[in-house]
Amino acid sequence: MLPLRPLQLFAVFLTLNLCHLSACGAIAQEAESEHRAAAPAFSDLNDAVKRAPQSAQARIHRGEAYLSVGDSEQAFVDFDEAIRLEPNDAYPWIARGYAFFQTGDMDNALKDFDQAVRLEPRLAVALTFRGRVFENKSDFLRAIADFDEAARVAPGDPYAFSARGAYYQHRQDYGRAIADFSEAIRLKPSALNYASRGRTYLEAGDADRALADLDTAIKVAPLRATTYVERGGIYGMTGNTDKALADLDTAIRLDPRLAGAYRIRGDVHERNGETSLALADYDDALRLEPDDRHSLDSRGFLRLSTGNASAAAQDFTRAHDLMQNNAYYVIWLQLAARRAGVPVEFSSATAKLDMSTWPAPIVNMVFGKTTLDAVLVSVGNAADAEKKRRLCEAHFYAGELALTDGRTDEALRLFQLSANDCPKTRAAFELKRLNVKQ
Image 1 (cartoon, rainbow, N blue to C red):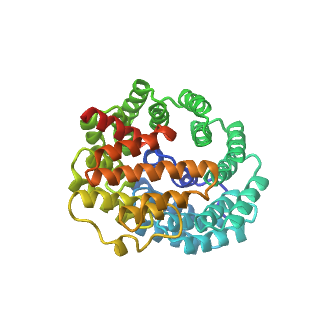
Image 2 (image 1 turned 90 degrees about the horizontal axis):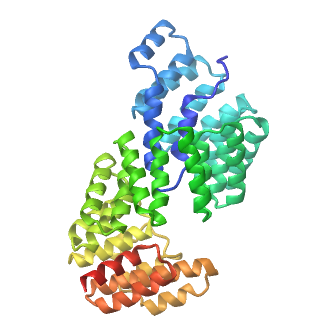
């Protein structure tokens, strides 16, 4: 029986898979780099396997290292062998289940985590992993049952509470999320736990408390680059450009491989009207992470707004290819393609979309299948907060469509309507840009 120990990859799992805000790409990179830095050299791991060929633990350690550098094939070889050597130990099953999760095979991940729970029903790490798979499969009742059980059987384990807190954060149950992250902080006042609670405060609309938690996270771990990315993002959203750029510059100095830092700094430059600096940052972000949809979206919008419609269409095409069920990429792709003179085909672009839900009316509008008036009528049944958001979007995208058709005055009017209710959006950027032109 292997000793019960938290896998090194467990903390990485939480970091990579339980965060959803804009800085998460940077956080994921940091988690992976920290894991690689903490792992023994492959020569040492190979020696350990040679010295103890019957040791499942040695196989797990080397498998984790392979997984951390993206070699899932070799990782599976080691995890399979670890299971063969110790089929009645939960940890080899957890390790392989995590590898399945990372490679997108949720069904096999669930089978391995089920086996781990059968072997160790009170093992919080197995329950938490399985809960995350259930959440990924939208089986929310089973997900929360596992997260609750993990917290019950391991009341002193901060990971059990941070995992459940992340679940509640994803479900926008911010009160419960903050309570769980607070308990995780009480058990382990780490920079990651403070940052997690800070992100939750931000999503709940409390930027002041979010900043306070991120300030504490930086005091706890002043060399943790991703915390500066997150705090810089908040400063940027709240209009504190100088502090935002200072934080993002610090993050890049600490770790120049953090693509998210460049992207968010690009966003700050964009809001500040510094187009060339923004484009340079987006280029750097995509050099580091070529398939980052958020960077493709940001660069595509800036390219479109500065008259480079063909290049913008390339960015939105790539973003759409990466996530074909995202209606907003279809909207932007059609707008860019129309301005470039090569509109896309409706049926192929919308094949993976749910056209019965928002923002399907806007998709129909940009393809010329309905009018703004009809879109505004469809907004009428939404709840107050959602109705306001949808109205902002309807006026904004109608403004983009007006620009596409050369109706600049109408675009200005529509952007102003959008910005009146939603001031910190792209509508405000377009207003500033068009007013400067005029």
